[in-house]
Image (cartoon, rainbow, N blue to C red; front, top):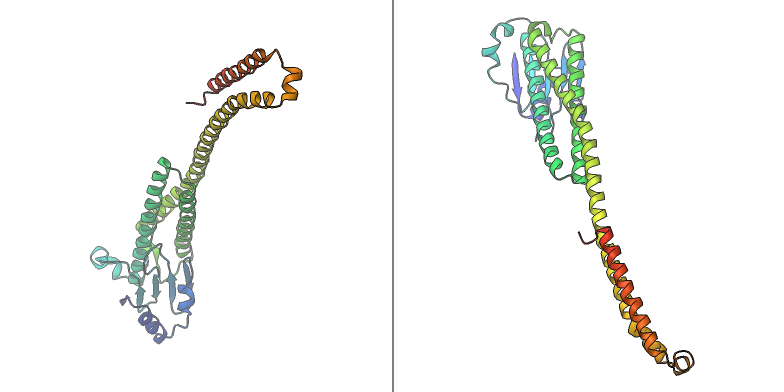
Length: 280
């Protein structure tokens, strides 16, 4: 008998009435798949990723299969009529369909992360890259844990989950889980590449800023030299003791020398500026 629940409290109540003494609330807090096999029943818990109700429970025995999920597992009877008639066919089929549905949820989340990485490839913002990296690592852990659960469920040869009834479909699902796991792992290296690209963009912006500052400092230095000319002349001729003793009769020479030194500084500064291509 298969029963589906969309109310978690009702599901717990039904489980307790069957005499299954398990701490469902504590299991529901786990962030990774969980399964436990006892004499009379087997319970499987599979969390999802970024959904409103991430909990998925299957409680199965020879007589019943209780399932709490928000996944739509429609038309299972029409597509697997022969399997449903076999011993433990119902529990095996529902577990398989739920594993397949959760893997589809994980692969959909991977596509979202990949699209975000494609956008970051055009505009590598470090903070967003780190967020994408965290999401990808978390998703990789989820798929890896789901893949391990699928292997354990097969190797344990649990009678309530007879994978031999769906051996071909189960192997296909196993291969699909391995495929998505490898794609997640390969994209972890892409995160490192995006991080390097972001650092290169930051260094380029820093170099541009330093270049602008150099232009400003060079310009201010030249201006300060020009401004110093009248200041120097005023300082010399503003002190009679100094101007009368040392520069009397040489005023024109002093002024021409200061002006020549100023123009020479401007020319050399301009040539230095052009040699560094600061204006480009």
